[in-house]
Image (cartoon, rainbow, N blue to C red; front, side, top):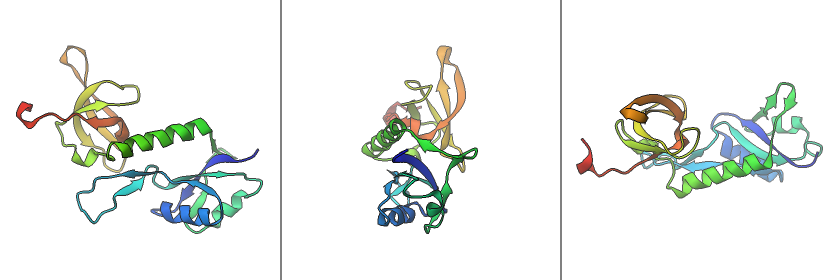
Length: 175
């Protein structure tokens, strides 16, 4: 089959360590990290875009799946049913571009968002819509927003945090 992108589950908070272990074994790795703007200056300034997972570009004929389970920091390859799941190149490129966009914009801005802040949706089914930030959903990378619809109606929607950007509104114009 040749080299294909696979998803390797890592042990908790071991993504970077695992990437180093794989690179030392000459296995191509895509460890996607996004900038974060922590409140505490001593906190991490980057975090995994997919916590608990990294992408590897490998040929399973050369590197059998059992090899990945024996690498320190690794759990196992992701399966769909009984088959090892692979990711098409175009999906990997789209994910790479999205992470580059987030980092180019200065990282995730969710820490700076407060309930009532004006937001804009950049992607997904509601791309182009505007709304009001309501809350970050605990334990997930999702947020709740009040989506502005026709006739001044607002719809409560939960979306992936990466789809939301802040609309800078001068403090004087806020009510």
